[in-house]
Image (cartoon, rainbow, N blue to C red; front, top):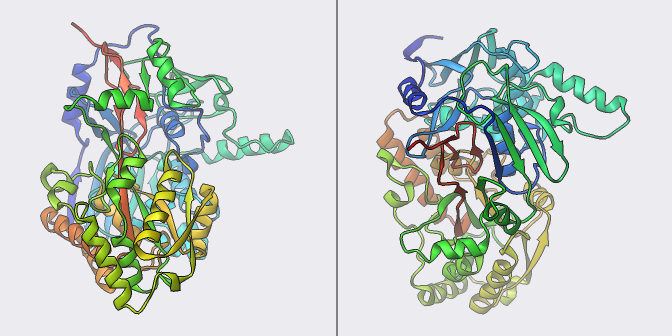
Length: 550
């Protein structure tokens, strides 16, 4: 293969690392930080961790190729983690090879961290038998589709040419690969021998416990090791002696578990924890009374997804009528104090060109102001397509009961009845039942929280490519596929961003889905502390927390 271009990036963001190190004090002897980020973790297996508590614990126990840290202003930045340097090479066929030179590091049992640990972890993530919800993160890696179809993970183009070199070949130029994939909890390294040993130990005990069940038995490569677990109460982490690089503080990190936001808020108010998320509805309401306050955008959009592969939603006119009949403002009001009517699929907070917000630069693609006119248009579209609302029969709307989604589902079905005379029955299901229905195509329409795997517009749009595993709407558009292919290979940032806006507009013009609302969040840290950060994907980093100096 002829090489066209070589770009070497040595010690990525090294200057930022120096600034961060200069701004942090030395580790305070015995400093203990106690935090609450919701309830107890549900899993410590990286490829299955979907909830914030699980992901937050994992990024303190393990270290990825890149890591997220807080800068002096409290913003999150990506710096080198296990990767000492990164070299990228554009190949003649348009693929891009990334070579990660690993720093010298040890696992908590003293064994050397090697590139094979990343190969094992990434192959395990991509394996269809693993059924990981984050497998699609690796869909940009060459051989991903072939490996899954053949169930042969050696086809996935990740390799370890040496103990200290991890190599990945991508299908195109993905600006967000280092920032999003290489910092994700799902791509954390794992020792194959440790996972196997812990699985065998569980089998020998005659128990069905998962290999990660005892966190104190885990072998990890991050800044902390698990020291003590009190089921349902707290998990204590201690600074790892094997981490191999300096860290500021704290020496001990305690995760307190709270089953509700109100319980977590009480822990913070009583000064039993120094950081808390999520905030109670009462606290959010109190904060929202300040006109200068605004919630942190969450990386997701709650939307109605139509099954375009079956009647009646195979007809674009039906999807259009249903979409026009939705009053997003009313639904957002029901959704909660931090919710706002969606203006597109891409939520606020996703970066656009030149650091500008993607949603701001793209403008509103959805009309949230002229509901009466839209209702008239919805009836006209339905009639001109040769349908009557009653003639569509009774339809079912699936959704997962979470917070206020039940109230939203009831109101949404009433809107369709009042505007189109269509009988839609809302049915609450479990998250597993919802995704089983979506994957199998056994649904008509469903309320789904669409979350990007990374903080980039492409991460929201790539799911709807014709052959994507996550294209649960059955959407097929050669124009859309072509746009997404151009985006994957774009070298000009401005042109790429323009294509991303065009792709979002096309998706909405085809009424593949109807965005309803986006949500915000907030968290609190004691005023005398600094160095904590929240990743846009939701999880937190506390390993750099220090006390502020006068």
